[in-house]
Length: 327
Length: 280
Image (cartoon, rainbow over all chains, first blue to last red; front, side):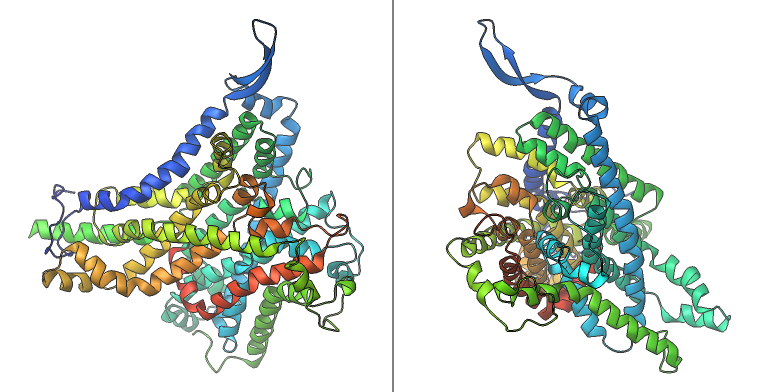
């Protein structure tokens, strides 16, 4: 970048000029950042601070029992990893990870399969596109109630499968129930995003491959998958972020304080509900770190490009700017 | 299309089967909700695929005095409606800036906005629950609306920016050549043309806010202030032991069917909005 930042545009200047609109941009962005600062940044900092405190009862100098927030340093985190509550934390951590890995894997495989079918289908496309939006539009909490009904002891799931599983009681089957409900709602969404990625692959790539005699399977692995990867990566990243903070589904479908499905979000929620804000904030902070690390891994290691479109614009502008400067 | 009309018959047959499977996969649970809602409460345990006789008894039950679902619906409309409105008012400027203006920290700003959309809601709930308890905001609309902005605003900004980006730049340029300032060009040329995109964004944001559960569950204890999603999850039978699934399903139909109809009417636009940004 050689050109210095130019003063903000005055009225009448054309947009294509390589000018920067720093001040105008700052003004227009300020309401959004003000709101995000108040409702995201402030709570984040408050939560970090809170995680270092703990409500404790003690005796004051006159021997009365007093209750107050005491600074305990990393005590809440230490408790979480190896104190009395460590088992519960690790269980929640495991459940969260399990739901994320298994749920996202199934949603992705099913979603890609759906996208391929929709992409190649000759008939019924409009109808499929309409029905695929239905699971997305059903509120998660409502879908949990619905699946609870389906998974009743005398419900339709057991009747169809000819089983007598108590799906919504503690045990491994509760995890399966949560996963089924989650994948039902999210696989079509992955399919939708993947389909959008498929539709921008130019047809001549396939024609060239066919001329070269590549089989359908080979075409899928060597052409479709690599070319659809950017769209798919973004879809997977969003799924991962979403499942890591999963709350509504296990909470409603199975219930709070259920060991088999308790996730980090549920654990933090539970503690906050008991006004144990310190440990709750520590759990929430752990989840935040977990989500941030996962996002970082996706963007840096796997190359998920979230702001692709915005970035392309900047590059174009920079190129134009360079040309203007050179001329 | 890579599948021309010359595609082998077996493959075409396979695709049609695939289509049917997808449709059943997506609609079967939803169909079950509708069917269960239309049964008589006494037929609740019936697992036949059609309700016979069809009864609206469950729907009457939903609005009965002991359930009071009407009030919950109203709460949901207020919370989701105001959240959507605030989001659009605040977010439009940011979206326009991201889509059209050229400034130094653009990638950084875009990154921040997308990062907030991934923020775990529970991290907000813990400190805000404490704060709202202290200032007496528990059981108020603002206690649900303000935290909801945390996910609604990034979603709206991102979706709107996608729509703004798709509009030809020449529009503003022409307007500005004609002597309008950028602000005027935005108000008189861009905004009216962006109306469909804003409308789509409004639908997507409204659905996200309408479906919100954790915040509404944490911030409200008073039955009168509960939103629809929370209310349904807490319906109890008259005795308190039997779970009134018929009523729950009827309530589910009431909360879901209007959304589904709106989504179906505007499906093309909504898909464009959802996929272009790659954001839920």
